[in-house]
Amino acid sequence: MRIIDAIRYGLKISFIKKIKTIITIIIFAFLNTIMLILSNIGINAYDNVSYNYLNGLNTNGYQLIVEGLNGQNTSKSTYDNICEILNNNKSNVSQVYMENQDIIFYDYNYSSIKNPLINENDIILTKDYMDDYSVGDNIEINILAYNSGINVSFNVLSFSDDYELPVADLNYVLDYISLDKFYIEGFTDKLYLKRDLKKTYEMYNDIIDIDSMKVQCGFFETYAKNKLHGKIIMYILFIITFLLMLSTIGVVFNIIIVNFNSNKTFYAEMIIVGAKKNNIIFLFMLDIFINVFLSSLIGLLIGYALTNMGSDMTSTFIEYLIGNDLGYVGLQSISIKYKVYLIIPIILLFIYFTIAMILSMLKITDIYNDDKSLLLKEKKA
Image 1 (cartoon, rainbow, N blue to C red):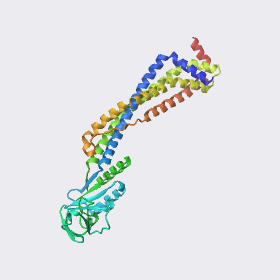
Image 2 (cartoon, rainbow, N blue to C red):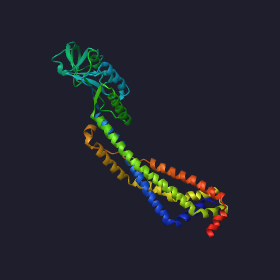
Image 3 (tube, rainbow, N blue to C red):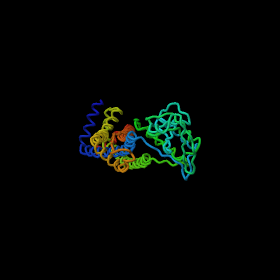
Image 4 (cartoon, rainbow, N blue to C red):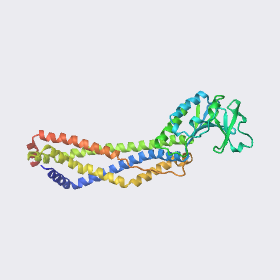
């Protein structure tokens, strides 16, 4: 039997069962459409949490406020531990500093600020101080901690308009006293990527994991909460999709068996007249293709056509998740980046194809091993 003949016979069989074929295609197309839409809404709802926070990060950067707990100062050894964490994310750290009276103390190892050769006891002042001090003057500053203070002296190195406030070396402060509170800030003029958001969030968690530290950051606090909620929504929709998938697999299995049994004598006749086994398997697979694979394709196309519906539902979820936190995110409004994922239809098609191939080989082999004349007698009777 030629392939074209097998196709002709297969189409003839499907035409004879046209009502059943059409109903099967409609049902499976509907189920595949629902599964495609639900799974894509789930994935996009989760992804769009990060997408919106990434937009906020690119708009305003971030700020971590780090301080000791229970009246304890941040010791130099603890700060050094934090610096090890910062080293893994140095490309996303703009500056680290502490504020004390009129002085900002920067850690120049983690700062975008570039100073001339600065010694540990030198200080750069803004030009607002030019009437009060001259280069080379000595300034005595009282550095305050929770329960103590210390006077330290700085030499005026120069004056500059590059900085909003006078600057000094944070490491110099660490040589004298524990830190009360300091700040870690990200860039506000950098194009962050999704991996940068992930790394910076991990840095935030690593600092929190230091038992003696308290970290304040509304951006990452709400990100953690909303990311978890997005993941819950995704898992719920995945569970529904998985249950629908199991249902379709069970129905496909049943359709394959029913279709085979209803055409068993026809296949036996083909074998008797000399049809090859591969042709019979192809004929069987064609019947399944018309009933199942074609419906999957139609469902996929309908799912694509309803992409806007998925986008609208994703937007609703994201509005619900982060609508009240836009201030922390640093955005005026949310934005949706909807992408259609084909993983569910691909998985289903693979499962359908595998089931059909295995059953077709087993069933056709059974016919070859059985007495074909008995089948023909049953048909005549």
